[in-house]
Image (cartoon, rainbow, N blue to C red):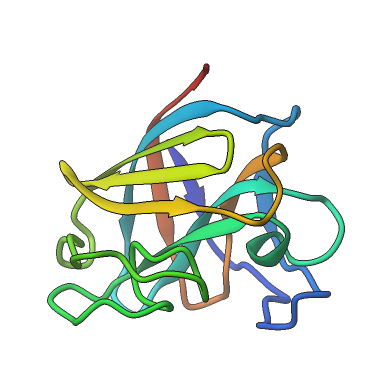
Length: 153
C-alpha cells in the first residue's frame, strides 16, 4: 500500500505542478487498475499520460479523487477527468472506504470504470503517451493506494 500525506504546491494553474509520484517510464495504450481510499475532506488524483513539465492534470488528464460520496457529478468532482468531463454517475464510496478504478486507454480514447460501472468514455485532444502518476495534494489529505496493476496493450 502507498500512502500520500503532506502534499504541497498544488494549484489550478496549468503551468505549475505540485507533489506527485509517477511511473519511471511513459505509457501510451494501457490498462491501469487500482484501489484507493481517501479521508474526509481529502483531495487526490490519478494522472493519465502526463508530461513532467507543467501541471500533469493539464498536460495529460487527472481522474479526480475526492471524498464526495452522494454528490452530483461535475467536471471537478470525484471520478471526473478534472476540468474536462464529469463522470456519468458519482460512484464514490464514503470517506475511508476502498474504491476500485480501471482506466483503459487506446489511442485517443480514455475509458474509466469506477466501482464496477463505466463512468467515462472520452476522446482526448491531449497527450496519447506520458507518465502515470498518483497525486499527493495537500496537508489535509491522506490518500491510500493498493493493488496497483499496469498492463500495456
